[in-house]
Length: 359
Ligand code: F6P
Image 1 (cartoon, rainbow, N blue to C red):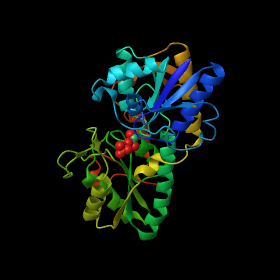
Image 2 (cartoon, rainbow, N blue to C red):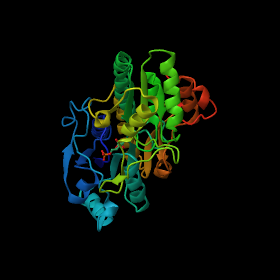
Image 3 (cartoon, helix red, strand yellow):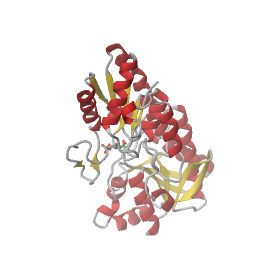
Image 4 (cartoon, rainbow, N blue to C red):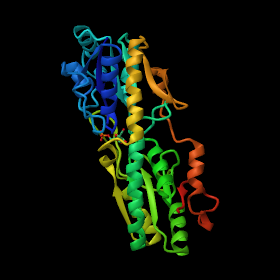
């Protein structure tokens, strides 16, 4: 068996654990070989790759990022990209390509499968927004990083009697915000799934500060947006792939809270800290199990599938299931998170738009 492997899209802790596991399974279990393409699909198109074996992967389990590099380039965006992928697969004698990535990478994997290329997907993203899998590796580590930040913000907010706003990643879903908000006892959690109204949020914060000197920490998902007509937003920027550049909503929220409440408010935007560094134990195990399952899928000829976590078991799902929209925050955890928020301000009691409250 001979596999090509690549890591695409935003990096995250755990990528190297997948690479290490796939290499080990292919070499030890199936007596095969693996090559790693550099910088995702760009490396496939440009023919840049390296041989990977168990010795090359020693020591990379706890290492963040990806030893192969990554990019957001897509073969279908390149002239003759599909033909080039087919040519590289044939020239290198590959049985399949294992593509580790998020929404964009899984979409390419789906299309390549449709066009007859042997591919297997491995779901990766700190956002945890990929359907058909309960968890993606990278997410739990990001939640821990954000929770540690919230813990630290509590003490400084209390010392200064301030409101501290923490902007976290997550693209167009609020999993990181809700999980870390719950874990960190945040006062307010704003997510894309629930457009927020800062009049309501500010009234709740004022009521809380009037009731006592407690830290107020507001967690804002970078994709959270105000209810229509309640706040003017800055024009959206896009990167060279056409993706909306998120980030900055935390500053707007903080300025508006301070203006409305008169309470000193500061912002922390965690940014790429959430994607850096070593994976936690959970992500190392999940990533390793995904890597082994990807090798098994190739060995069994289960092309056009994505490995996934369902009911605590590693399964395979048709790649099409993994690319049907985004997995959004479910109502149950949203309700659980709301229970830990402070009571709505009396004036706003009937206007339950956002999640707000606190320890
Ligand atoms: O998808 C992972 C992610 O970290 C998102 O949470 C974030 O919005 C995006 O990547 C940032 O993309 P880039 O690394 O291209 O700036």
